[in-house]
Structure formats: C-alpha cells, structure tokens
Length: 405
Image 1 (spheres, rainbow, N blue to C red):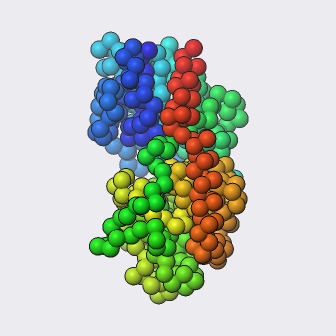
Image 2: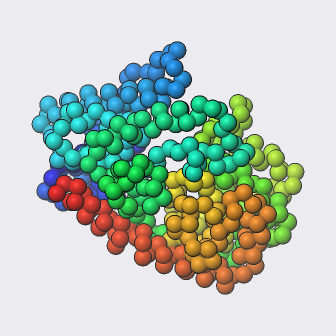
Image 3: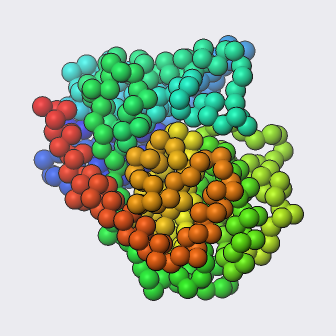
C-alpha cells in the first residue's frame, strides 16, 4: 500500500507508526513536510518550502486561518509535483492542526484521508476559561475560537477516519465525527522507560541517586497551561517541610500553549520572582531542556513527580513517568483522571490547591513504601494499556488496515 504522512514537524506523533509500516517492503511510505528533522528509516521524505507570508491589515480574527491557508497552499503545490512524479497514495494520514492537508483531496480525490485528532477548541469545559487567573472575558471569544476551529471543520467534512491518543481528546470533537475517531495512543516504549534502582545522574557536578529526595516537574515549556505557576507557589512549603529535598524543573522559556507572558519577561521568570524570596534556591534546579537519555535518568531518580495540566492534551511525559515507576502527584483534571485513579496509580489533587500539592508531595517523600506501591501500579497500568510494541502499535496498524478496507 502507498501511504503519505503529513506533519509540519514530522515524525512527531508518527515516530513509531511510519517506520513500522515502512518495515514492510510491500509498502511505499512517504512524508510531505517542510521540516528538515531526520526521518525514520525506510520513510521517503519530500520537503517543500512555505514562501508566502501573512498579510498586513487583515482582520485579526482571520490571521490564524490565513496562516493555515498559506501552509495548505504550499502543501497542495508540493502534492501536485508528487503526483506528476507518479505517486498516488491509497491513504493520507495527516495532523491537520497547521492546515497542510486541507487541499490534498483535491489532488488525490480517491485517497482515504485519516486525521490525527489532537484537540478541538472549546469555549467552556476545556482549557479556555479554566483558570480564573487567566480567564478571557472578551465577548468575541466564541467567535474567534469558532474561526480557529474552522480549519478542523473543513478537514472533518472530507475525512474518512480519525485517531486520538486519549478518550478525553476524542470527546472534545464534534459529536457527528466522534464515531469515526479511534482512540489509540502513540505508545510508550516500556523497555526503554523502566525503573532503574542503580541509576545515577550528574547535576551541577554532583552525583544524584535514588538515595536522595528528588522532586521532578517537567514541561516542554514552563507555562500556566501545564501548572507551572501553581507548582512554584507550592514550592516554599515543599522545601520548608522537606529540608533535604531537591527540586529539578525541566522546561524551556518559550510558550507551547496558551497566551504569551507580559512583554519583557517569561512565564518561568515571572512566577519564580513571585516566590523567590521564600525559596532556598540552592535546592531548586532549573535544567532547561534535557536530552532524552538524561530525561529518562531524571525520571528514574525521581522520588515524587508532579504533573499538572489544564483540561487539554495529555503530555507524553506523564505516561513516561508512570512507565518508569514514578510516584505521581497529579492534577485532578479530566485528562489525568483517564490514566490515574486516585490513590492507585498516583495521587490526584485540585489543580489550584498549592497547599494540598505541597502536603501530598511531603506525604510521599516521607513514605517510601507508598512511593513504591504507587509507582508499581502506575507502571503496570502503562504496560497493560499504553505499551508501544504490545498494545499501541498493533492497534495502530490494525486501524490503518481498517481505514484502507
């Protein structure tokens, strides 16, 4: 079969599925992308450039749609060239979030189109207006979100199938399309992400082992949507109650989701300054973005891992921490509830309750047996439900066959 993947930052969510399909020599697996990242073995890559820039003086509500249209046009023209070269896919698997796949059915009308359904924006009940500190009161919010979803709406009208990594993410899509969405996670490599009781990692010239009290907090970028502000407000009490504990915070200074910080600062710096005078900064380590091997070591050395999120896309890092056997303190929000039952695979707390977060972290730091119990249950849950090779990848391949047939 001939399959074309579309993703502006490939391989991304298709990092396992694409090479698994390419391993079958009967398949012709290709990707159309502007990204210059290395592609998995066996996948043929076709690069294209986005040459047009956004217009000036456009209606502000339309900026997002224009950006997606520009990307869609670039991918459309690249697809025309690919068709001239004789490639006609049986199936297109696309992440439509940036618009690239919008016009591909105009090039290949008989190809099946399957979408990676990551998130469909909501005015209520999801990330928007969840946090009172960052509530948007603009009366035109619903209008802007409707136009933000317009790209997805146009995709859904022509798509044959969808794929969501969690039931929560599937649930935010329009009801008429939900029956077409299969829930299969991208998969966790449990052979790589596993406990290591002999692990040792270097931190500022010091060797860190599991004999120490290590609290970990991981974001791609440190920002409110992933609870960075709440975690920072919990830190003074955590450090006060646990004088031997160290805190290791992973994440960049940019913005992955949500609004940007005030001009001239970062979310990281803004909320650090709020509590800085109450912290022993010799025990708080901001390590930026880690290499993946170092990230795994960090999880393996962690005593307690804190994960907070708005009702939004569930982070890989939580499932990776569970696979390693971390004792989790997580936010009692819908995405987290899907993978953690309170007091079984982790402890759930109110997202906004910094004092309760501090109390639960302290409780676990002083109860190593509880750390082990929660961590073992968390890993077993991942093995049974999210294991890459035994659960998720076989389901994804079966899904591909089902879409084609």
